[in-house]
Amino acid sequence: MSSPSARVDVTRLLDRLRAQDSGRPRVTWYGADGERVELSARVLENWVAKTANLLVEELDVETGDGVLLALPAHWRTVAWRLALGAVGAELVEDDDDARVAVVADGAPAPTGAEQVVVQALGALALRATSVPAGALDAAAVVAGFGDALPFVPDAPGLQVSAAASPGARVLVDVREVGDAAALDAVLSALAGGGSAVLLGPGAPDADRIAAQEGTAPSA
Image (cartoon, rainbow, N blue to C red; front, side):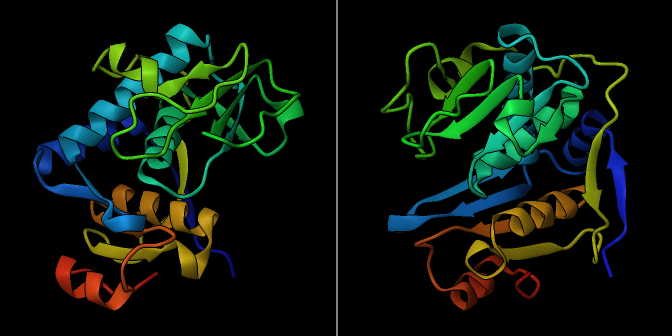
């Protein structure tokens, strides 16, 4: 049986998380080679706002426009998902249905989308290593966009599964559940007023990180 889901207003969600505790870790990412990135409510809101403004101002994305998000479960993908929800974009699975396709640095560029965006995934990456002609390098330009979320009055919101334990800090291991389920678990934790520790490929042992981060059992 599928989990119950709801539509969440991204601006209100981020406002609520910041009001609860702006410095509290909300998304913590562990990757390969000891990579660890921690985003507080304030920092997460900043990344989402800049990404949402990139979508609206640079890519002319409007409510209902299709966007293909061809990225693995990652902290940057969480920011993209929230930004897409904030501007009312529709998440699609086929680049032929997409106005914009967002792909990981080094991945083949889709041929059906009107605009391709390349996203570097390294923690300190300021630009992508491989950007096809005509594509946009997200890491190189995102910092130049505004820190306030754009006002999109008719955005339907972000659909998320209901959080099993509202307010909890949960461990999500992509190696166990896969990319789609991992992203859904992180977004559900945020929507429930909690936080998530996301383990990617090459991350340290899940049990050790759970003890270190004080999380609930692995999703």
